[in-house]
Image 1 (cartoon, one colour):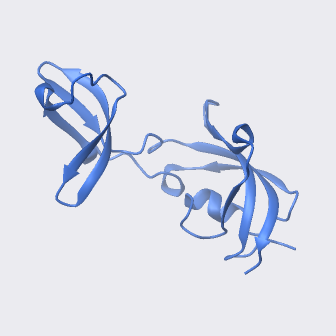
Image 2 (spheres, rainbow, N blue to C red; image 1 turned 180 degrees about the vertical axis):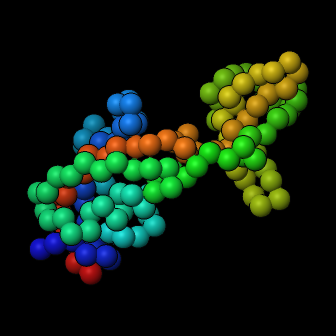
Length: 142
């Protein structure tokens, strides 16, 4: 039975950057990922790639930023005074920034003079990705 839009399925996957560096793998966690095919639960490139596959099928898909985590946006980079940072903040520290729209997760990416640079982009935004996908189960057909 081929997977259709709306099927609840389970997959194993390995995600790497186009250059080959792995950033995620369900195989290493041991449990397959469950989601609804064609939904917005996952990035579009993966959610749509499973349509038409069957249990046991494997596929490798290249995913451009517009079908992955989006493009990088310079307006998501914010400069703040170093003194505004929590004590002990260092490069790579995840912080929460309060905005009029609500809380936003940011990463401390640079120190420049008396300022710090915070990045609100997803860490994989702007990246070309490769996903190896294996269909494990159709849990609930649409």
